[in-house]
Image (cartoon, rainbow, N blue to C red; front, side):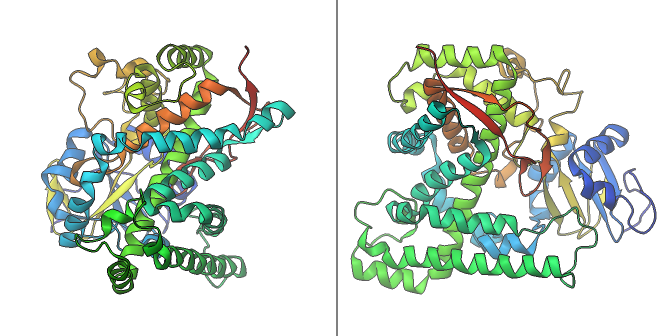
Length: 456
């Protein structure tokens, strides 16, 4: 393929090109690239080039019109080591079979049936903050929401057998996250003692996670009959007695493990992060906080939220959507070209990595007035008319969009409503809040908040 029709873009400096800027702050760097070079740009990453596609029309070309010319990209080998060949990373017929089999369990109708037990678990968890409120002790929201969303995701994916393993899994996964490779370290190599130690600790934690999941699978035949988890849905029709279940699990341990961990990890981590940012903006804007408390009080009052009532929380949903616009948990994702082709009139060579950054697209002034301002009314029906659906992509887009988008919004509304029924959360004085690009766009220093009971 000729190199005469590549899109414009930054070259950076020296042998590393733009890699130092990309690794230091990928979100803001890519935003500046889009503003300067337009909807498609070619970025020099030193040893290779990548494309940034930010214009919604071109995003559609990548994810919909030419979807069969791309495969998903795995940024770190560790991602595949943790979740394996589940729905997130599998390709071709394997992915199609996994997706079509899972889809019925992710419809609004199916998920709404889960709300009652999810509400009960979440309410019991949030009631443990009562002691913090009485003793004037702050809570670390990132830590707490990871605990909560892991519990909810674990029970939904793996069933009742997850509950006694919840704390163990949390501790193990925390070790995995602490020993994840840092993309900001340009000198990263296993020859350095620090990185070698992290690699060893990562593999130990992963081995423990596998042990825990396989233990749950081995015990599953004893809890199958009354189970509510997605695992039950993974068993073929007719596999419904103890002996058949044991045999099927024994012959499909790795595949089941991969599918369970894919759903578990993708369900809890992004939701925990988005909840942190939602509670941050709710506290930051007093009028938003008051409006949410008013809506929850009017629609739900003190009763337990139901699916029907959650669907009536219109303003709360707009707040969460606007929070996702500015603080998308998945700040970017990428695809790898399978063959030479064109996007937007520019050549895309085979093996080219194409980056799509929701962080960037959600800040394009052509699609969002005053894009850095928090404004839930952007999602009023009259203001969404004519807006490209590819201008708002917190759950990606196209045939490989996030299968759990409805569940994520439902759980976020539920947790926000339960908190609004019980507490007033305020950011601790002096606590620094800064966006950090990890596997999700998390708060770099956590999110420490004071907890107060609502005034009678």
